[in-house]
Image (cartoon, rainbow, N blue to C red):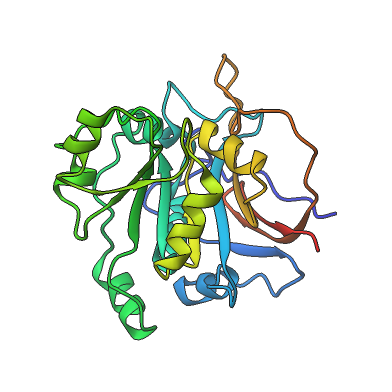
Length: 267
């Protein structure tokens, strides 16, 4: 067990110091505690040789998934750096429609350095943006669609309203997976047939619960923000009951009191 020091003085409530460079160190496996740069992070969050579905979430110490209804209040500079790294190495980003609306998702764009990294590794400049929606209650003018660098994909089911399917079909490729509800296993299989083997999901809680229920989660990245949120914020996953899935802890990173945990499916 490793005991970490308390956040330094003159920090904000999340322990972040204004104007100070982001410093992330590795706690497990044992390392030399030198800060990790962008290249080192890609080693710790690599593209895997086989098909992988990863999930990335942030939570407070007491388990809240939002502050005042948004996840941004839990995030800090180091979390954003890892968040960007995970997007850079994925083939497709999968997000639920509720999260797209609530968090006001914009287009999936990467900065010049990350686009260059993808080109150097034989990847398209931008990952696919994939939105999962039962009702197709989506705004085609939202920037996630209107400003998209490549045409997004919207996954729904055969019973979704035909008029909404037609409307969304003007700004995205609509994929039908399932009859009366979205079949996530079929959707994942479709993405992999398109060559998207490295999948990343950023939620929200209902989508995560459904992915767990369908036993599709291979890796789980959890950021623990050093905040006690209280209130009635929900947990990171909501869905049907099912047997627990055992995961193995692969690494623990730390930055200004925030922990970054990587779990992988146990063999």
